[in-house]
Length: 168
Image (tube, rainbow, N blue to C red; front, side, top):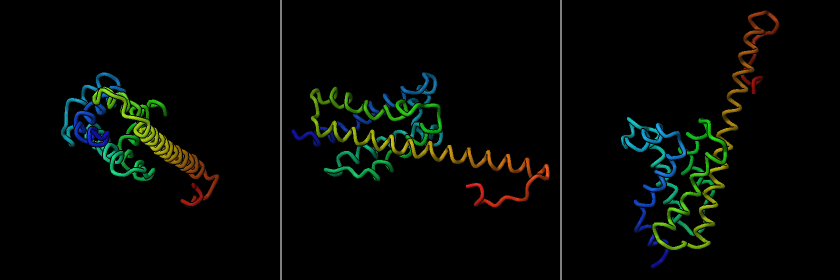
């Protein structure tokens, strides 16, 4: 049987196990909550993570060559959540590599170099998105610090009003 057909046949099982592996990277109590509740409103992080993993899985098999932008978009939610938390870069994107072992165990055979290469591309896209999110966070913090310091100087009468362009 074709590897893509085998993967599609086992799609739900693969995604469920991938979700479980992903939430296990959180502290135990958080992982329990994320895995227990499937409702989007009661568990937005768990729901968003599940949806993101499904989108990535679909991207893996929709085309022969993966579009890095589409991959980043598919990964955006789960990576953005992890970027604002206390994850290191390797911990934030490490969940992607879990997919290799999960597929190997479910299919009971190595899926091949092409699959491994695609998963590596997903990991690179996740890292790129993670770095973009962290850069945005840094810029927001830096801009807020500048604004706070300037306001203090302004109250002290040491400077005049600052325009938004001056903060960037």
